[in-house]
Length: 419
Ligand SMILES: Cc1cc2nc3c(=O)[nH]c(=O)nc-3n(C[C@H](O)[C@H](O)[C@H](O)COP(=O)(O)OP(=O)(O)OC[C@H]3O[C@@H](n4cnc5c(N)ncnc54)[C@H](O)[C@@H]3O)c2cc1C
Image 1: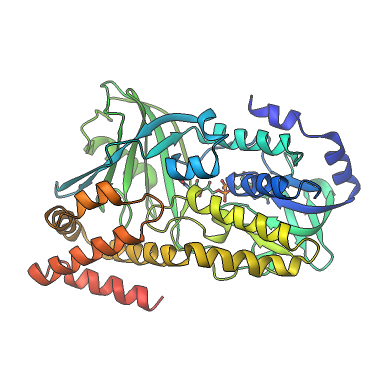
Image 2 (image 1 turned 180 degrees about the vertical axis):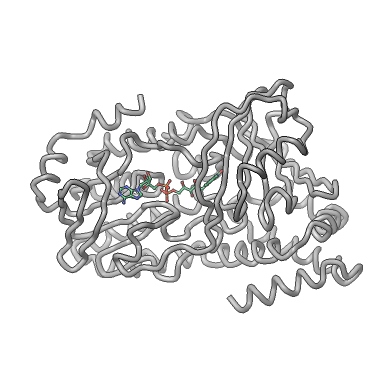
């Protein structure tokens, strides 16, 4: 199934690649960013030659993602694709602190889908292939010569490009070669899938704010169905030890310790916000490689789907004058997502400054101030700015009232203001 994508690679693409024949636009990375860009561009400008190079032998593998994506994003950006990859839908989240405070956010309707991420990426690839995009698997790009427009691949192969799109993920291995900064604040993360002994309430995600598990971040449990869950955390070190502790603590009472862990995978979540200039005169950088993930959660699909659409639109609009594509793409991104990203960065910095007792106080403050009810009924998983400002206001009032939160809030704000 997975390899079908590779099997369907048009032979001309392979041949032209090995001969080094000019192909107009080359995308490096067949993750959701690269594939969304390719699909959007193929829709907008079907006459353009478009090649996607992917280092692995199959699209979507190895997986690294928890696969939770808002229905708003999926219905808006991927209406033909996401149902082929959905495992579950959820309507809210239970947030717990180490001290035992608990907040339930319940939208009372499905708000997010839990995806089989490899299947999602493959469905995107199938759509792109249907639109005439050429996809080359096992094609790792090792070097870029921008002045000559040449890519170096393994085994001495080369390919030329007139516009290059880098969608290589969080490690952004080629950014520096093209003179673009790498994303900051990468956090190592681990994800494991469990078969549970006891049935689970499948409509709620669980988030744990506990510095023993995920200092400055959070651990999660995402139901795949009644008897299976994806469990993970992000932390600077000791990921497996922390995962074992999470099993032992079993904060949601789902019997993790006695459950069968069926597979473990990992990656890096991007929490530092977008890089300042994701382009050069003939390169566009999109997705995790451009820091286009939510700083609050590391969730990337909602942000990169918009960025890839903007990058494709800029490419189509500036055809042949590629030096104009980057500024156009970046202006669009800042206009649509700039304020949102800044608010999420502020929230991330404040959250990272809190100790466990302060997190406890914050959850209580949010409950008492009625913020939770408002979040449940009005908040948006992707556009979080209004919810963040509401939460910060409640936190500020709590800080004035009991002083516990004041130092962390002030420190977070100062750090945010200092950049
Ligand atoms: C543990 C974890 C949980 C997450 N959970 C969620 C979640 O629940 N919801 C959500 O929205 N986001 C989540 N994310 C983030 C999400 O996975 C990323 O934002 C998303 O995958 C980024 O897509 P991308 O296409 O930019 O990069 P990637 O998905 O990383 O794809 C990059 C592709 O480029 C290829 N590549 C890299 N270098 C080269 C090269 N030199 N030559 C050829 N190919 C190359 C790679 O093999 C890969 O296929 C999570 C991330 C992690 C680590």
